[in-house]
Structure formats: structure tokens, C-alpha cells
Image 1 (cartoon, rainbow, N blue to C red):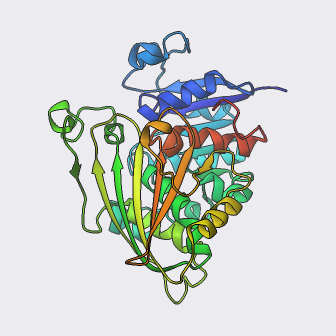
Image 2: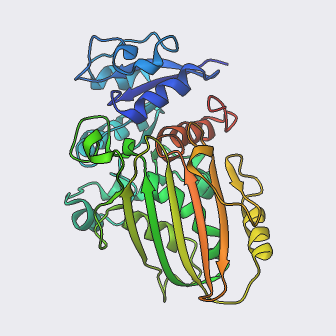
Length: 350
């Protein structure tokens, strides 16, 4: 089988580095163009040194015509809003050629264009593409992902939250009172030095940020949750989402508190989760009595989910763990590519 030609735009990012790693060992894909204007002319392993001995590819400047003409799959890793209009241009040209686009920014995740003004301070201007974009939370949307031309790869916090919550929301086990307490590794702040990723700030410290219903992933979580809410029309679910930066490099752990709408045992909840994710290669549901830890998912594309009921307050405590850069970004993007191209879902990831 002829290998798929892969181009990556914004390839100096952390998530792009892991996409490069996974494509390098993928049996059905090869690089067409690895683009970074800031690093053009350098070898990829000079910038992402952990890739030395894994890839022998040079960064090049992004050129629209070259990428469109040479690519079957185009990954775009950019900050929200920065590449929005150019991504729209790429999507339209790629569609004519039969190529597919996987966007790791937030630019095409939300279906309502007006939400971008509220949550991202961006006027979107491409509502037609928002309609066509497929939300790429693999385990919850694989039936649509396989035919996607523009795939909006989910955010890291929403990936963990939605996978942790979807089964109980679908079964109407919660009355909608949901609190998400999330801790992310410092890699979530990106590779460029900033006030939130310096050693002086992070070491021996945990700090909250964007608290009080202002973190933009809140909108993405609520959109995803209500897709599984049978009562979304008359009683949409809102969440209280509180993110923190924690003193580890990779990983996310989310402790989610959901008030139960009915009495149920932990063994019955376990059965619900196991049935819901029976065919999901990368979801591990832990048996009652066991709870996830960050160290068990770092470096993998797995999500580990466990839970405990607090009978005094009738609260279900769901704990989910992922690697924020892999399952929360690059790994899920490649997992989605595999589904879009008809490869084994785990190709390049295990």
C-alpha cells in the first residue's frame, strides 16, 4: 500500500514533536513537509533533542502550494486564532485535492461561532467550516471521524473530562451538578518560556489559573457533555471547571464530583463504564477500589478512569488521567488519522 504523505504546520510545538515521533514509526505514513518558520533550516532533532536517532528530517518554511500539492494529511498545530483564516484556506484547497486536515488548535472545535467571541476573544468568520468540522474525541465520535475532511482535535482537559463523564451523563446518573478539579503538567503551558512554565514558578508549587468560569475549555466540555445529555434541550448541563498547573512535566489528573440523581452501587457503575468502552482500545476502566495515577499514563495514549461513591453526600467521584500532550493532543490526532485513513487505530502509537 502506498504510504500517506504527511505534512505538519507549526512543527516546533511540543505536540508536533510527538506527532513527528509517531509518524516516524508508522507503517503507513511518511513525511512530506515539516514546517516551522522559526526553525527553518534546522534538523528537527536539533530543536526537539529527544528525537535524535528517531527522525532525520529538516524543518522548512511553510509554503501553501507545496503543502497542498504534496500532502494526503495535513496536521496544523498552532495557538487558537493565530492560524484560523489560513487553516480555512488550507481546508478548502485540501478538499478539492482530496486531502484531509487535522487541526490541533481550538479554532474549529465549537459549533457556535459566537462562542469564539465570548471564550477566545476571536471573531471566527468561518461558520460554514464549523458546521462541517468533526470533533475528534476518538472514543465518542469514531463513526463520524472516519469520513471527516476537517477534524478538530479536542483539547487536553476536555478529552479527560468528557471520557470520564460521558457514560454517567448518558445514563442520567447525575442531576447536573458537576465540579471538575484538574491538574496539568507544565507542558500544557507550551514550549516557549512564559510566566507559567518557569522552574521558579512551577517547582514545589501547584497554582490555579483562569478560575471562575473563564477558561475556554469550559465551553468545549459543556458542548461535549450535552451531546450525551438526553435532557440537553430542556436542562443543559453546566460545569464548574477549575484548572491548575502542577509540578510535573506531562500528564493530567482530573477529580470530578458529580451529584448522583439516584442510588447506585460502585459495581453497577463499573459495569456501565465497561460496557460503554467495551470496544475502546485506549480506555482503561479501573475496578472499584483502584484509582488512577498520573505516572501510569505518561508517555502513552491511554486514559485511565476510576471512581468512588461518597455515600454521605451521594456524590460520585470520578478520577481520570491522561498524558496531556499524547492522548490530550498528538496521540489522539494520530489515532484520529488512523481512523480517517483506514489504518489500525493503534498504528504508530504502541
